[in-house]
Length: 434
Ligand SMILES: NC(=O)c1ccc[n+]([C@@H]2O[C@H](COP(=O)([O-])OP(=O)(O)OC[C@H]3O[C@@H](n4cnc5c(N)ncnc54)[C@H](O)[C@@H]3O)[C@@H](O)[C@H]2O)c1
Image 1 (cartoon, rainbow, N blue to C red):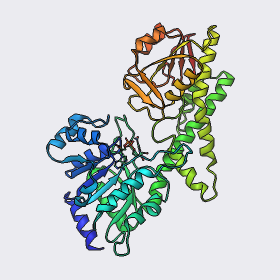
Image 2 (image 1 turned 90 degrees about the vertical axis):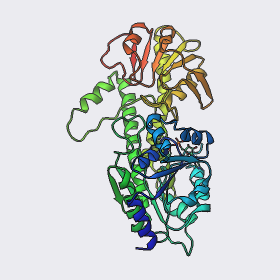
Image 3 (image 1 turned 60 degrees about the horizontal axis):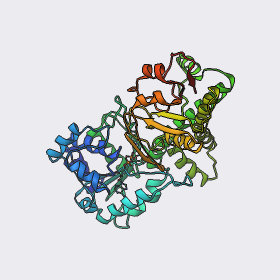
């Protein structure tokens, strides 16, 4: 091993390494906190001045990081944030947690990774460990990132170290958070993997080293593709059951009693969030280059994408059964976050449903204890009190936040379309289930 390796390993093991995290969002900020808790001095870098100022005041804007946890770390000088990449020259390690969205054409948008690496490269120095955490296609770390850092006199695995470690955070999950979700890490060389694993072992409970960056990249895509396809299957089964007058929720719950060989996935109004609807298309984009069509992904993407339309058809049919047209009716959407107990509306199917209802002439209101305002996908709305559901011609439960008063809703609402089985076990003529 080289002296760069030995020096950095020592700094990591003694927690003297100066840690940097680029991209201070849902993924980056919890990571900052874990490394600071482990005793490292951590510097966060983000392009948004507002986030940087907020961190430096000790105020969190990420639900999974309470201000009461962040503030003492900032006050103790363990955490600081800035917008200036010049600070990279003082750092030993960098975790990159920037967005990886899709373009409109469903092609990966690598611009955030490229621009942050270009900035890091300006201040890069020998003995650094760089780890990409953003979800991406297999090959990103070795094909795209490595050439941005390597030079003939500056070799990966000897003078600097490069890894990929997929972020698996599940916002709002009280049981599994950054610290106790096992961390997969793969390096460009065995020395890179060794240092990457040693680094995470200081702060996280379980580390799973793998043989290459490509394996680590593929792990994340397998996990999210598995979820997306199985949700697609559950949605297709729901469409079949709807035609045949069978309660799909009862079917899945009964099937889930099988103690082996079955894992329940549930239908719903459509996919949401930053990961499940997006990540599989990183894989299909990449495999197309090798002449392989990712057919399961395309099919599940199609079925999942139809669900908001199916929900709006259900609302229209339910209103028609009560001799009301959808046009001009008041529809109240309960829950707009992409899943329960979080404040995130990215890719939320509620946005599609609100668009479709508006296009068909319905008057739409919404309530969501986590989302006081929507300003996304051309929708600008403010939440109303959940009690407004009483006035609506139809209420549609899109996100099953546990905080909603479902008993009161069943008593007072005129008509309810339940896309999440939030009213499980409640029998009433006014409930229409997915
Ligand atoms: N949110 C999740 O649940 C989750 C889970 C697993 C993996 N991921 C993946 O992790 C990555 C980050 O996701 P996120 O949810 O934290 O995103 P986010 O949008 O919450 O945070 C990203 C941050 O990066 C900053 N940023 C953008 N460009 C930058 C640049 N050039 N330099 C520095 N900062 C920059 C943004 O201002 C933002 O604060 C994505 O690849 C995502 O797919 C997210």
